[in-house]
Length: 388
Image (cartoon, rainbow, N blue to C red; front, side, top):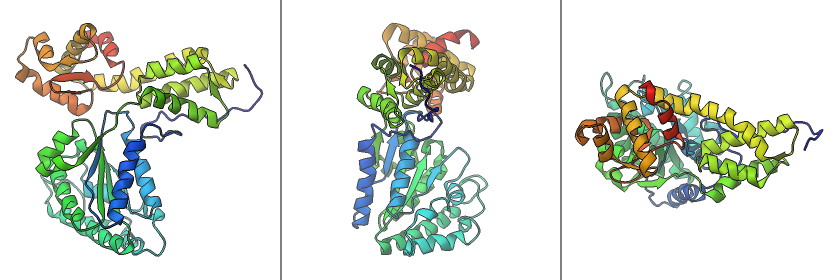
């Protein structure tokens, strides 16, 4: 159906870390962060909270939402996106002022943050940057502890708190992570300080290598969306713009996305664009069919291609062996069966498996079992089997 109405803005957000118009399926995770806030403001302790899940499942979106909600409550809650080779104190210095504007006017915490910012456009008191480890002494983390302690003491006087919200924690070196956890543990024992982070499914075992007591952190799964949640993620943003979805079109998008939040946003985005080209105010199955080649091309050149091209030759052989076994046995395979398919001992291929897990290409949903981390990646690997 064509209409003379002007084009409506596309309400879907398939970009990395972009917050969707409808944040669905994360009520329980948000409630946990709210519980941390209320516990600390009341003078009680709160355990560190870690969200774990696959890439594209919405962990970054969740952390940013939590950071905003804490900031609106008057907390100092900087969001840090970590990466390999970047020390946590340097990351904090880089974003020091970004959340200062949300702080409560007149609060002691606000004045204390302002004092640090006036020292040079960031928390320059933290030092010159670099790594904990080679070429860098651990005392820089003493500076980090002093800064966070000072902020925490001010927050305590205000009845507020400080939260360190750290994304991609599995990318931090063990030395840096161990030093950070030590700082965090010392602070949370005596000040209103929260440590909220996120990482890939292997994050619990990785953090445990840095400090054994982290086994008592709260690890909360951030899974793919259930069907009802996936439908809401598609329907609700369109409804806000006065656009509806035909039932068969909705079923198709939900099915092809398989609950994966990034795919839901991408397929819905392209279907919306197809409807705009048609001048329609209802997204039909025809629009979804027209959108699928555009979405698939982006997936194959982006998320699939990046993971495959970033794999070594031995890792590609491992992926192909998994894909062949899955063709016969379903969406999970035993790591021992993969080793046998490669005519290798399990111990010999374990480093390859572990490297693929660290990269987020595969994951271990249960002991001894492996699965691809992205829906549809098995078919892509099969199609690329002659490339490595």
